[in-house]
Length: 283
Length: 273
Image (cartoon, rainbow over all chains, first blue to last red; front, side, top):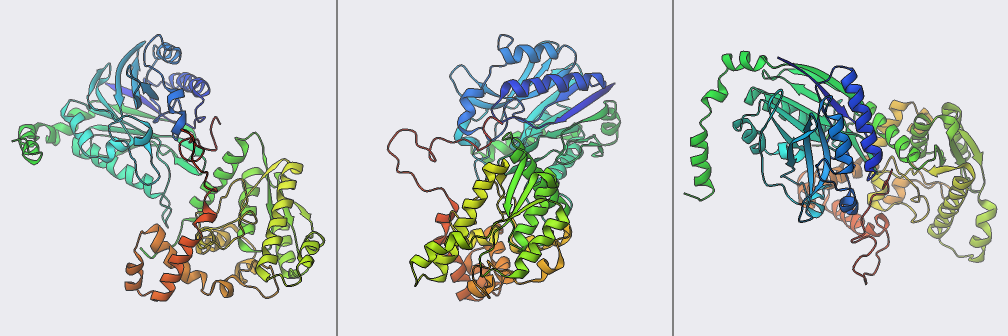
């Protein structure tokens, strides 16, 4: 089985959901016209990243009666999509969120569980912390979605792997930083290293997309990538340019890689759980 | 940890994109900058010309009667090389009435008046030309406070503020800034014979290495001394960074209400764009 994946590395208008929605719909048509089955947008693709006090005014509910999601769900009848947005729950807590939409339905919503609040980041000041990490079934197999800082921690990808995800979808609004002598920023080099590492360790597909453009002095570096279960890079978008990057995923590669390298079969979940309980002082 | 080499192509790409994005998203497409004949403004001019097209950049030369002819000539070389629009407005006749009112005025006061008059001209040209003022201050001078508040530090956007002087030299060389500008001693050219390094009391090459360790690498002053920097030099630079914080922030607003600009009214400049 093959899956044609499109990764949007798009610029956004800060706080202008309508303008960003129009761009989503345009890119969805373009991705579909180029044969994509699934289109992944970056973190906070409907709103922009450094929202600060804009946060409450750009929030939406991922339901069919929400005016923004109504249009996105309609578009999801032609291809599956992962969109980034601010989710406001019924108690008026705001989350950095990503929703997987397919055939007019909301299949899964992930709330970012790790909110960087250090250095140039201030997410914990404006957002509530997500509290669950779950894989979910799609018409292309079982997947998991994580948002930026979520995959700077090893445990969320590990949990998704144990929960059955064979395709990890990572989204970012990663500010470029760390200019040195090399041709890459430190931020992009590090993300590519760990994503290749996750693909290799979990013998799974790992796709990542990151936005581009500027917000005040911050640049976002794009550089979407897809790694296959052998840890091979099978697609790479350009840095700093707005584009769609396409990758054809041969899902049968999971069978071939895991026949050779049964890391998943041999993973000792119960032992991990036992040791985790001991470390956490619960036993 | 001591390697301050930067990839100049990547720096160019990010900074050109920054200038283009941060000007065009305001609805404008043009830039104004003061061209002194020095390396910082030369680099800003090259970057702005690439970002916006040379026809959309206005470089303004604003000599005072004591400014050197070399500065004017070097600025002209940048104008010729980049093809930007240019204007020369001497500030002597504007500055003298104020300066002559106080016959014993110290050089620093005179220098500040010149820097602020240049700001007045640039912001007037900003309105006349329909372009934003592009700043030319680098990370070294911002950290050391080696600038005039509301003078040369005044700008709408600053592409060079995260580059140390050492980086400015690397990037300028890579972009083809004329050799006479690359090679000469940096100077604010506020009075004859002035050089940055004589006035600061240390060399850019030395202070940049120290600042890079203190700020970028988060080394403690003691770490830097152990790495071989002279303790007095380290103490002087650390104190200079602290003392000049006021130049790097907006004036504090006294909080009275539940929502105060700067404390809990937080939006980026790029709000809505």
